[in-house]
Length: 174
Image 1 (cartoon, rainbow, N blue to C red):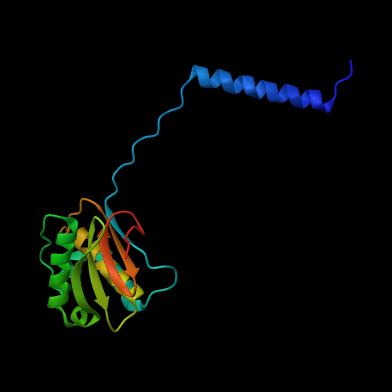
Image 2 (tube, rainbow, N blue to C red):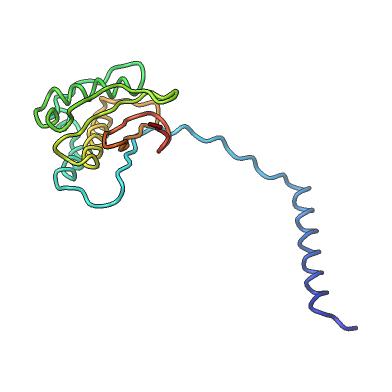
């Protein structure tokens, strides 16, 4: 009996087909689990190094967040939504310190489709650094127990201004 490569390949394929049909009838595939709602703060800054001041703010936000909030003169974050809480927090920080007042020159509430967010103008520093400082401010407030979020917050660059909104990354439309 002469066996060709073609016959061997055919037998292998036939066995695989039978194995698949047996496994699909005996055990159903597990259903995908519903995605857990993510809560937290994300900042889209791109790659590269940050200035020493940005790094220091990040260290303070992690190691002594209450001191950071004290330095920024932030006492509370109140509001019905996460965006409202962030707005009250940032208003305190922008009014409370001259440095923040000089760097962040405007804060307004904006909408895009069904989303509401905050638009913040940055002066004297790069928008990228401004995003990271705001990220550290919010993380510090969260670590200090001042900011309690119920959703995922994004901080992004949108046409050389900072946009803060609730939702998945890169879902803000200008």
